[in-house]
Image: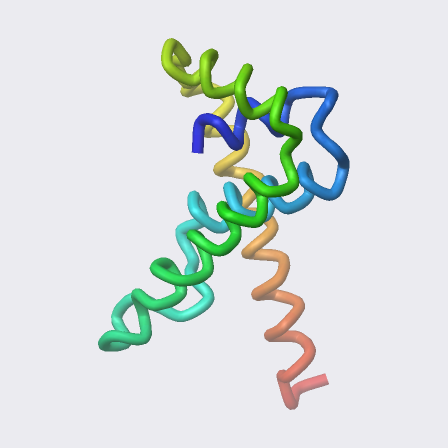
Length: 110
């Protein structure tokens, strides 16, 4: 995840790789899963299948020189915890907006 984060911040990474990296990191850190974990067996399959596939595809889209440099930098990287709270808040707001939008779309009360 650190390598993906560093590759996302690198200007040499293509925009489509950055978009995929953003989705992967947001999904990995999101408190809400596509399939809730309390559902037996299937609840963990999204984490066991979707995240590794997404990470694999993101690695394939990142240029080799960017991967090599980010791997070297990732060994000594320290997370900025203040930014983590900001990004976490943004992710929660996005999920809340999506939940509100879905609720308003299917609600029989108009």
